Length: 355
Image 1 (cartoon, rainbow, N blue to C red):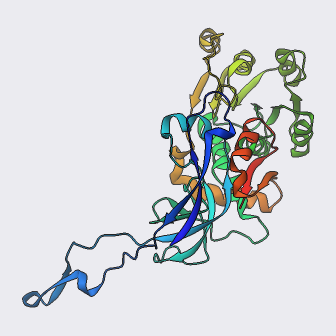
Image 2 (cartoon, one colour):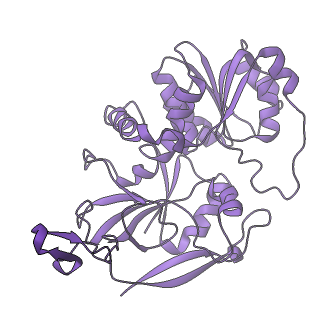
Image 3 (cartoon, one colour):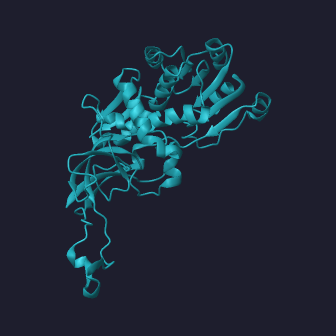
């Protein structure tokens, strides 16, 4: 028997999450099952000179995982309301090491990315885990499989290529641009020959965006007018807008779009902790007159492209074309603090918890 530590949602969040919304619990895990067929699982038919499965034995071949890195992401806040009940283990992704295996697809010692939630250990039948890329170099931390070479990186890539269909020479606006998704989106757009403007909530974050090669960057918290900041950064307007924030920022940004502009709605972090729903202004007339396209998306839509896309981004990272900063919190006991810090914008780049 293995004992796992888990963080559960003690009660649904009301407004910004609090320490008392989480509870650390222990969970007893059973030994991984061996789903391989044994001779006793067959019925022998002498007149057919063959055996066929009895159909009685059907359990899957399981593995025991030990968490190495865990991810905290903005989506966990709204998803907790629609995907979870009080008492459930917090949702989330982790990089884990296989420490026991009855599944030949996942041998002992290999590393996987799994939807295991906030757990130190987990038993999996393999359906909810994926092996880290075989070509993963030792010089690249496995934590990046939760960031630029993982779901956030894929989100940035698909938002630009599949939703915005961005083209060389176009101008992209990204908000929350120093975060895990925004920082990658801006760099990919630069690789594609675009002008990139980034908005972030701190002077240190603005400095980071300039290090990454953003053409323009500003601190939305200190500008006297968001409208003027956007106009000064790109007087001719914006062809594409990678939306991570929502709320009043979105209302202003939409007025700065060029005709036939495209908006990829990835997130709305300014709305996640509201107890009273925000209202207007409403963008319909602006969208009609400028013939804008606004599309929400989930990264899982293009899951069939993930392997090729991850290899592409890993190559960019190895070539020095894709740079990624991490905000690492040490200790599984600090999962709630890391999560709340990320929602407050304390991180530059990807927020990670190292077990």
